[in-house]
Length: 569
Image 1: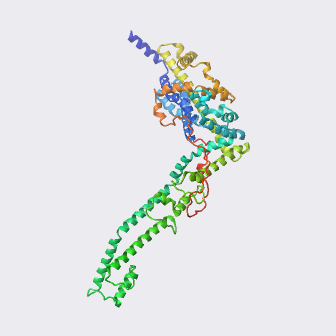
Image 2 (image 1 turned 45 degrees about the vertical axis):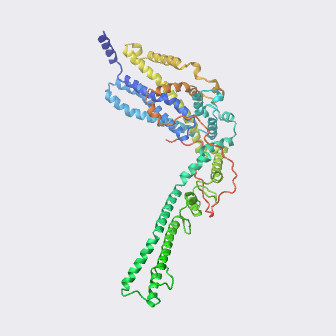
Image 3 (image 1 turned 90 degrees about the vertical axis):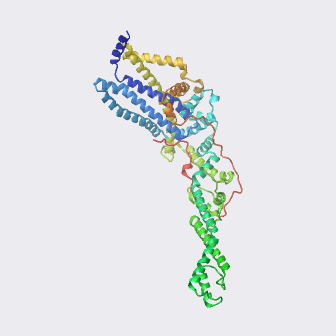
């Protein structure tokens, strides 16, 4: 009996398209990645993610979308076509690999291309609106209003990520309760960082040459110390050499004191050797000779040290040996060198730049001017006319803002769509497989297998996740999600489904390769206000160097914040 059953199964499966198990594996493998990623992208982008982290998630989402499209093309078109033309399995699979790569790459580029086209065709008013919307979004995200709105944290994260799409900018500003100036100030503070953070970053990035110079200075100091310890030995050696030379030259006895030959010996020692023995020195007076040699050697050590200092710090530089680093960097000549190295940063005259400078001085001299300049730059942008965003100086900034508005929402929507479609496709392949396994003709092809697959998915969603027709709506989100249009409604639906996606994602994450991938992606982290408001500091007097260096030139362009940036390709 079992033998007949096994033969029947083998016979039934022999008529099944050979690629059906392969598509079941490919679709299942995709779901094991897309399922956990779909809720993760909303949680990451809706949290305290940096722009780089947002772009990293968006790029990975495009890769999954490309994989989804490639799998769909293989299952719907390529493999059925290969079977109809009686191509061998080897040929079909060999052609599938480059086809999947081309389709995946085209999808990856098309998604970014859509966002680029969307930014390009936007007019100046929309671009400016997108820039302001991004400011309002960042401000709302840090306020953490999910408690006040009474929505699950997953929905709040998804809403923050897609807020500029599902809400009107004026409503975002109203919900913020802050004027544009306050939004700009908050954005600049987020972009630059708190004073403590900027201080740490400033000295880590800019004081490398100062630390290297201090190491050279310590080497020079060590050389002085070693040479100074050897002064006595060198003086004794000089006397021994002098005595040996005199004994050799005057083998019958040294010249008598006070005579012409003694005077010639003094002249040779004083002028030719450079040993400062006094005039009238008695040529047999060892003590005076040794003292003079010590004076000469010490002066040579000082001259060598001074030469090394001037070589590094400039003519006339003076620096006492054995200074600690804090005292070293406060030397006016070192300060000038530090400022020369930081030519690209606008530093005020006279202020001593050192890692132990008072915090109030750092804020007044470095942080506040940097913050003020960046604020002015951003205020000019948000105050500019739409024409400046269309063809003027802020056109590129406006296009970047539109892309930053569109890409997160598009990524979340495509991720949700890919997950839902492939859950259905996986179920459909499984139903087809069972149809061949149990020889049920209606389930082998045609509409019936899709109807059964849809019913299985619907029942599973209802029984396991509690999904009903009302699960796609949220009164709390509807109250504030004022954006109109089909696209905004679809994105809003994706936001509402985030809790259910999170449940699916957690289940699939424990059963598949996601644990290997998630370590390479940014992790969700709820937004906590990590930067303080710019303190208003009136510090007087500031610590001033004794030498006024030349005026520095310009602010480091890398420190000027922008609320949006061009996503990396």
